[in-house]
Image (tube, rainbow, N blue to C red; front, side, top):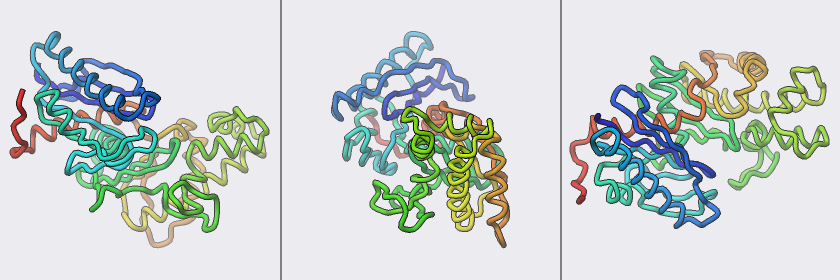
Length: 314
């Protein structure tokens, strides 16, 4: 059966699948990224994992994968197929596309993890059928994927969609990026976890605990939550003023709070818009499978659109 390899590389774990042309998952697998062993070991682990997936396809599906799609974190030069930088994996300028293509004997597409997840949400998830959307996962940090007519915009230098570094509180908390007051310092899942741990006096408390306390009527939790919602609304309104999306898709750990997040967020955004058109604000549909599914789409796109990919020696 004709299929492609889809691989989503995270800071701690890798999710993978063999994906058929109709999008069905023919095989799934997971493995630790192994970042504690250093960047070279991480790269070798990715290559070995991909080779195992290729071998599984041969054994169980009767043929080798026609292509592979790989999503990685950090700064990604998609045109050159280079994983330029990832702080949590420790690598710089890794020619991952070429390394994988040589190991697999097949064409490989390399993508940024959030943009790849956004591609999947736009085509087969919460944004299906939408011509313009913005996908914003609220996790350890905050990034974004700008969807336009079935593709995701990377920008001139691969930095498009970095909404987490819009300054929403000038002079506020310091951000690792070098600025102060960035959105992700106030509205990411990790920011809410930190704020609630400090407010509640429990160092083990996290954003999910804060959401539960909000639902139970805790005044301190409501204050922490509202501060995050207001910061997020400020960042989103800046983004929609620039991009005019038809749909805002919110994912990541914070979105798991459901209407505890979405009800006040929709109201906060509504209060802030003036001349702008109010977009639909919806939860992401694909959860933690978005990156892997998006990697599969990248691989199929490569087969459907590329006629100039160089031959790879097998």
